[in-house]
Amino acid sequence: MDWQREFKKRPIIVNLFAVLVAAILMEVVWGLAAGIVGGVAISRDPEFQKRVTAFMKDRGVDVKVSPDKGKAAYEQLSPQDKKNLDDMTRVVLKGANWFAVALSVNVIVYGLTGFLGGFFARAWLLAAGIPVWSLLTNNPVVRFEWVVGLSLFEKSIVFLLPLAVCSLAAFFGAAVGKKRAERKMAAAS
Image (cartoon, rainbow, N blue to C red; front, side, top):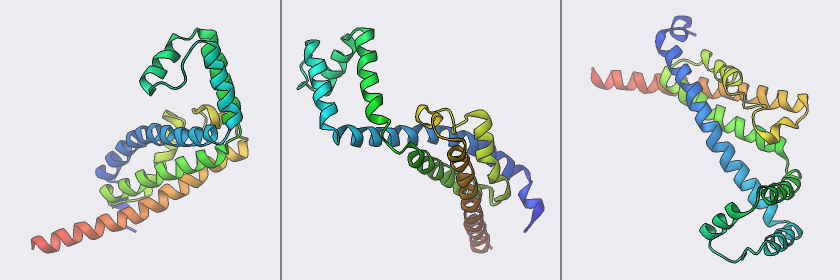
């Protein structure tokens, strides 16, 4: 291992940038994952669907309208009705395996940012800092509502496994980046 390469300016800058990318990706991937998990949980619970339909009909909202009109109808609800509807939804979503979701999201985000960081930096050692800096700046382990309820052991796994994945992905990304740079130099000469 070339220790001087690991701590040059380029790897430091790339890994700091990777922390920003990880924060953005965390929002996007969590949004996708929560949307998918929520959609599946709601679609598999016909009792919940009946309760929501009855709730909305009681408030005079036609439940068979387009999504745009449905959103407008939701906005017309009183704050108390919105809270009641949100509470009903939370009960259904509590049944999801949020540990698996959080672990998957973190592995995807940090695996991708680790690989790309290693690829562009052509160094991998500092990539372990991406999840650590994210924990200190964005705190993806406890920032999302459904992860807060996980046990300390589960939160530790949600942090430590992606840390290992990020480092391993950065190692492979650095290897690919170095080979690519060597081929470019060989082709240029």
